[in-house]
Image (cartoon, rainbow, N blue to C red; front, side):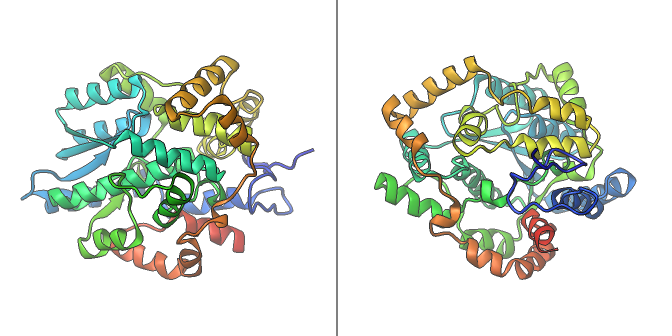
Length: 381
């Protein structure tokens, strides 16, 4: 029988997992430590109120107080609502990589229009998007959506710099998402350039990416801060969705990050069927820890696959056609050897060897401790 943490869904399939004598995993202990360092309730709200005053003060001579990346999903949609009600002047940015769902686009339009928030959409040339995605799939890596994550960060920093905005407010909510293992999700610009050249013989010309030097320039020289307001609030996805549906005609898209069709494919098919990775072990555990669902409900959820048969048939047909993969090519990729990010050049060895030093710098300049450090500490004990 598979060993599973008594506090959540984390099980022995997860990289670096350990259990104490009581059956509590280091993943649960990491969640608890993060919660202690980021208290919600009165203390969290007081911290947020202090940050809010700072943002308003800094932005008073500028066109906008803050920048927010929007996807049409629950967290970023709720964040727009919350920030507007807090009196901030917001510039919203949406990255269009050619895979946004119609529901997501409608959600973005509805909420930004009703709240009178300026919206910019950055469209990436799809031919480059296609080459990038194909290269990651050919490379056999788990997190094939990593380049899009990096592109979003790049566009947010670039836009903040252009508009002289000092605060990027992020809709990430650790308490309902947890920390995915680095082995599942790591991606960086150095690896991005290597893989696209190796597997598609292409050097990206217009695909945005954020390398280490750019990150340090924006963060330390230009002093652009990334803040995650939802981590300070008594935030509930379930309550947020009810509110959004009621006030903004918002629609749910069916699953975690399913607002983007390629991300839905990556999480719902690529990871579980090629790598036997179910990200619901992490997100479900987080929801159990924050009291949103019971452990029994979480275990019941795991009995059904992330996507049903009809969804799989539909999305495989769509993905292969959009990426110009024949059925034979796709089957060959699915049957090829699985790789990890450690099999290709990246910044990771430098980052890991200097993570504690980097963490201190980040905490001083950008006001947050990387989740990766919590993960490393939980494994090193």
